[in-house]
Each structure stands twice: as C-alpha cells, then as structure tokens.
Amino acid sequence: MLELAILGFLAEGPLPGHELRRRVSQLTGYTRPVSDGSLYPAINRLTKAGLIDRRTDPAAGAARYVLSLTEPGRAEMLQRLRKPADHEITDFTRFYVVLAFLSHLPDVAEQHAVLRRRLEFLEEPASFFYDSDRPLRAEEIADPYRRGMLLTARATSRAERTWLRETLGENPPAFDTACTDSDPHAPVAPAS
Image 1 (tube, rainbow, N blue to C red):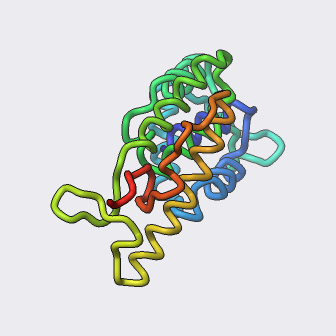
Image 2: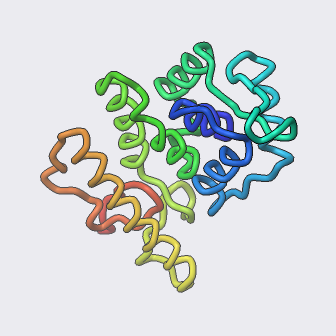
C-alpha cells in the first residue's frame, strides 16, 4: 500500500521528500498513520530497486532531495494497478490506495477489470458476526454498538456498489438484496 502510494504520487511528477510524505499521510493517515520509520525505508527500497530516483534539490540545499519515478518504476506501478493482490481488493484502505491511482492505467478495460473484482468481493455474503457459518444481519444483533457497525457498513457497501455499477455502466440487479443486507460489504438474503 505504501509503496503503491509513493509510486502513484511520483507518477504525477517529481516531489521533494517532505511533500511526498504529506501527500501519502493525507491519503492514508486518517486510518493508518504514516511514520518516518515506515516511509523512508520504503523510499530507500524503491530507490535501491531502481523504481524511483533520488537527487539532491539544488534550490533547497544538500539536506533536501527530490524524488522522481523511473521508467521501471512506472512499469511496476502499472503492474500493481493492473493486478492488485487479493488483500488490496478486499481491504477498504488498501483498495482506496489502488483507486486513488487507477486512472494512471491507460486502458479503461483494465481499470474496469479491477473495479469488477471489487464489486464481486462486495457482493459476497459476509458479516462481522456469525451464527456458525451464517452471517448475522444487523436486525439479528441485540448489542446496539455491533448493530451500529453493521448498519454503517451496510450503507457504505450499498453506496460503493452503486458507484461501482454506475462507473462500469451496469444496472443494479432487478432485486438488489442490498436493500436488506446488514453485513459489512455484501448482500445477504432476507431472513425468512
């Protein structure tokens, strides 16, 4: 996630290290703070791999540097966007990092393939809470805080599925069980 964010922001143009840190923090920091202890080792790994270039900024002195994306770095970023790992599709924050840079893929069909993977994931029944293997619906949960988790996740999932379908040019199913779902990300058949 961190490396993709670095590559993605540098694909938009060279940046001084402190500006890159600010942008990465703004993108992911609200859920996962970005520390110097994780950012700068990632920059060093990408530099050693030849994916980014690090040069001293002559305007700012020897203490400051500018990072830029190399051609192998651009190819790596595009590959990560074309074929995100499963956990980058299923994890909300990781998927949003992919989504933030998905427009860098020049082929709309490739962009849509990633969005379809996310939609397929969101349409699988799931919950934070289960009765054996059966996902529990918000209406089946007595605890108000757990029910709140499920209701909030339901609304978020419904909004994301709607946006994904609109972006993909697809119509919602005739009976979208999302209207009755209560799980974190997927329709669940109404209780009988």
